[in-house]
Image (tube, rainbow, N blue to C red; front, side):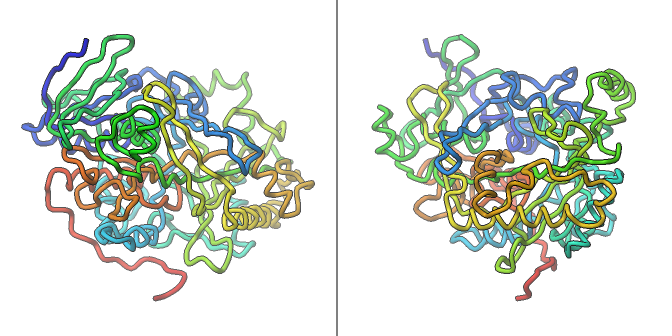
Amino acid sequence: MNHTTQMYDTIIVGGGSAGCVLANRLSADPGHRVLVLEAGRPDSSWDLFIHMPAALTYPIGSKYYDWRYFSEPEPYMHNRRVSHGRGKILGGSSSINGMIFQRGNPLDYERWAGDPGMAHWDYAHCLPYFKRMEDCLAADPADNFRGKAGPLVLERGPAASPLFQAFFAAVQEAGYPLTQDVNGYKQEGFAAFDRNIRNGRRLSASRAYLHPVMARPNLTVQTRVLVTQVLFEGKRAVGVELVRGKGAAERIRGGQVILCGGSINSPQLLQLSGVGNAAELAALGIEAVHDLPGVGENLQDHLEVYVQHACTQPVSMYPALQWWNKPWIGLQWLLFKRGPAATNHFEAGGFIRSNDDVAYPNTMFHFLPVAIRYDGTSPSGGHGYQVHVGPMYSDARGSVKIKSADPTQAPALRFNYLSTAQDRREWVEVIRCARRILSQPAFAPYDGGEVSPGPAVESDAQILDWVAKDGETAYHPSCTCKMGVDALAVVDPRTMRVHGLEGLGVVDASAMPYVTNGNIYAPVMMLAEKAADLILGNTPLPPQQVEFYRHRAG
């Protein structure tokens, strides 16, 4: 039997990256009662798999931490179903991701602002929120691009291995520049990366934003709670329906409901609640509360591959992967928070233009001083190194659509990877750029030959076939409830409210209109910081007009 319980001012559905930011900022007013509902487990302090940086491969794919989604068969990838990990734990994907902090290129936000109604989402308006959220330890105090007092502490990867030094030398030999900070004045180029690690531990959104304020009497956080429906009275959201384990359905009322479930769960919940394409919902026996055809459309992501080389010298991190070394490595971390377990491995990389047609970088590189896949396998069979690489601005578009009215059934994810001429062309360019870098003289003392894809993969067709067989998601699904005012827009960029409804907002990666250049954690946190002001009716931070690097002037 359904029963209705407490009243809150704001119900936040999803305790992930954006939800943690909102919970902190909205509950700062002691008179504002906030409830956070998270489907996953707590991010317990004893859980080494989420707090030890190098353990990042373990939670992904585990039912204890991950929603474990799969795409529908991808028609341009030999009908493969691509695995898609999303965090099912307090902190969301920030508790299981690679801890890489990339803002994206300033021109990403100029692109956002180019859409109708989006003028206040340009770089000048976003930069103050990037700065508000971060404490960048490596930045100069006078650096006008970086924040120094925010809750999210950022360490800069040391990139001290000889292989990192060879990589930095090789990119210059290949004709690419170094840059001081990919999140500062000039993204284009190669540098050590910022990362969400503090004192040898992962610093998730939950640990940075939620735990420090958990004792606020007006903030309630509940885990292991599955929200099954948003409740409406007419066109106004008035609460949510949920289940705890195998218990009976409950209803909780709230003054407003903010969805922070991410690019898969937020459109899924909207559709289950009768918000979406009315014809599609009717076919599933769901009565439409509001016909909003853009819900679940515009899905974007980054596909990536590993280009891997064997290493002839014993300078890679391969020994740290051997079972006989893991007890000592684990003990080092437990006692001192040092050693191989205290790094996320993704300590450096960069951004380049794969062709002269694009105005700013369209390709991202992560360099690792080890050859390993996310599942822990090492094709080199010993010492090696690799780059993770892929195009950043695929024009392929997909969708997230529920298959039934059952909230426990995963929705259909269709990414349409490699489905466009631009996507296929840039993939060939990207692989050739990666090979050019890894074949430079700087790597000669270490290079034991390419092991993946290997020398047999050379022609354009062979490269594309390999990408289709080997490509994996970079875990950046986004844009499925996009901000804007066009026919497929879902979220009002001035208020973060869902178009045509009252008391209902969406704040997460789904609200992005276009995916950014790089990992999306930082943009999501920025978006949530700004959204908090918009939702509270605060005067937004004033725009900061700064000059940033442009390959093309004007």
